[in-house]
Image (cartoon, rainbow, N blue to C red; front, side, top):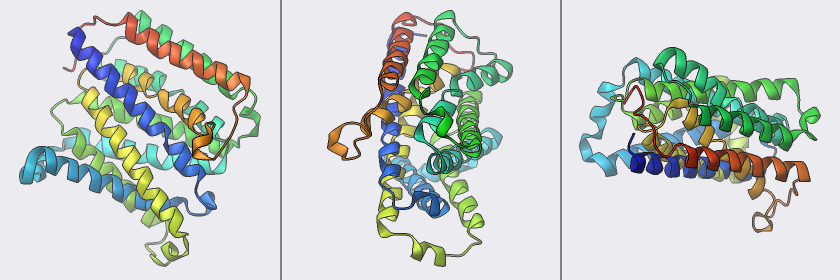
Amino acid sequence: MKQNNYLYAFIIVFLAGLSWSFGAVVVRYMHEANSYVFQYLFYRGISIAIILIVYLLYREGLNFYKNFFHIGLSGILGGLFLATAFTGFIYSITITTAAVTLFMLAAMPFIAAVFGYFFLGELLTRSTLIAMVVAFIGVIIMIINDSILGTAVGALLGLISASGFALYTVTIRWKPETPKFTTVVLAGLFCSIFSLFMLGFSFETFEQMPIKNSYLSLLHGLIVATGLILYSLGAKYLPAAELALLSLMEVVGGVLWVWVPIFGINEQPSLTVILGGVIITAAVIYHGISTGSKREPVTQ
């Protein structure tokens, strides 16, 4: 891979992780978050789909709809996996501590690496493996004081979310010709349809949700959609495991934003959380520096 392509991909996927990290702030502002999970997911899924359609309209004009005729199996699977990640994350973070959810997300690079190897033949470089292990240690340090507070169900949902996102990452690397942004549109729609199904296809329940939560869900959709656009752009140049590794900046940023006074949440992190965040950031930076020159991915 040419060095400038790798640097471009590294930067935009890094920014994608930071974009997603603001999601933790949005969820913390919700009123009785665990009571309105599926209403929240419905609005967020719809907003993600609409934003991606607007982006496609801007990028490709009125012919953007032709992308939907080229989705194929990889696009459908990618949409289902990403919708699973959407649902698992929100459900997990609303019924357990953020630390437990973030801990489960740390499994993403490993899951992506395994499936990327078996289905795409993408081999891990030594620097990528080292960075993944160091980042995983960093996440463990971040949540070492809080892990016992989480519920088993919340942890399981967090793992399901991590698995869904890792598998989505593999699918968008599987067939490069599959329209990646259309896959995200499908994910938003799948998430909304599933949420509506869980609500018994009743719109009366939406009237009970505070209007504040509705606006927050739309804002969260914008944050997620922006990150997914960046992530999809970088997917062309990075193997699945490296994509998932860079997305761990969501973990570090999520802790930072709920700490800084500007957002008014003021969840002051412990020394172990700060130390773990520094380790994860260092692992990602090390990986970016050490892999400046790489071979072309096998699916390119």
